[in-house]
Structure formats: C-alpha cells, structure tokens
Image (cartoon, rainbow, N blue to C red; front, side, top):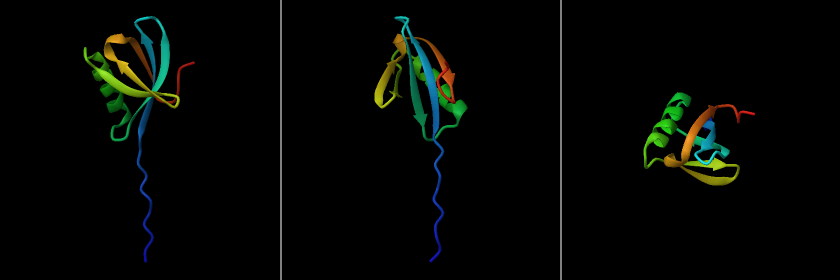
Length: 83
C-alpha cells in the first residue's frame, strides 16, 4: 500500500495594528485560509471601509470583532506587530 503524502495548507495570517477613533491602539491577527497576502490585505481594507463593515480577528487567544466605523487607521505587518 502506497503512503499518501500529507497536504500542507497555506494560511495567510496578517497582523494589523488598529488605531481606533478614541485614540487607542490594538494589535490583532486576521487569518484567511484561501487568500494570498495581497488579497487578504485588500479584503481587510475593503471590509473596514464599509459603513457596516465587520472584521472578525484575534487578539491573543480572544476573538476580537472590529467595526469599520470605529477604526481611524490601520497598519499591516505580515510578520508581526510593529514595535
């Protein structure tokens, strides 16, 4: 019986530094299992640009939901938060 090679799924994970309209900042991660990095970034920007845009992301082990109307600025760091 022939061995089957395991398939490796590439998941695009980007780190977002979000500045809220209150002035607070938070670093979150967003994962898209199907998109390339550039597509993932464009999806995040398009989602948050909508008045009713909602983005499910993670902050550590917690689910974080970002609403586009509360985001003032966004920085993208594919390899970790900007320090």
